[in-house]
Image 1 (cartoon, rainbow, N blue to C red):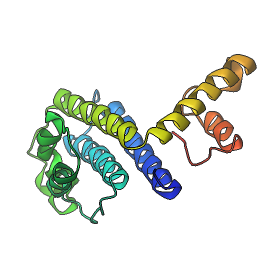
Image 2 (image 1 turned 135 degrees about the horizontal axis):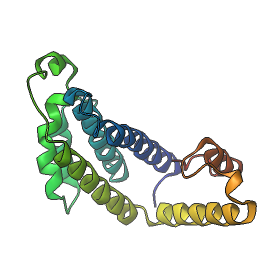
Image 3 (image 1 turned 180 degrees about the vertical axis):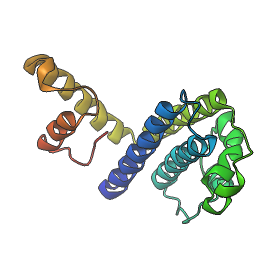
Image 4 (image 1 turned 135 degrees about the vertical axis):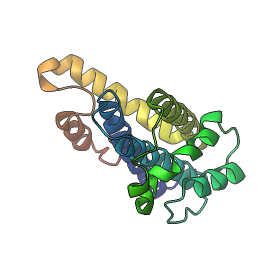
Length: 180
């Protein structure tokens, strides 16, 4: 059974990863946006997902900017790693602040980046559900409650998944530690 504080931290990390992934998706089609920014948000999304999985697996997570170090730690402690995780090592230079000025000449395969981050998210969410089945049930119940409230209140009450209104609704329902 997973401790409530660990579950809350895991959800916070998934939320932060989702924010980076959302930013990544918005930046990807804009070719005026520097590859360094796209790579940075991809690296951050992957890092947060790995930290969340390590937290659920009760593995201490070092304070590091080194993505390969986190990948190695996950490989040692969590079974069933996707191929995208090994490939994500290529993102490491984009997450290293001291290397940011050196990346200007380096190009990034943008379709690969999105494929990689989405594949790691699918694996991380599946691993989360395996390691914390009670948390999965809580998330499913919350999502069902939101669907019922949307149906009862009408579309005008919600601006869409993840909006401030929806998060406030979830918080008012006593599930403030489970948010998007």
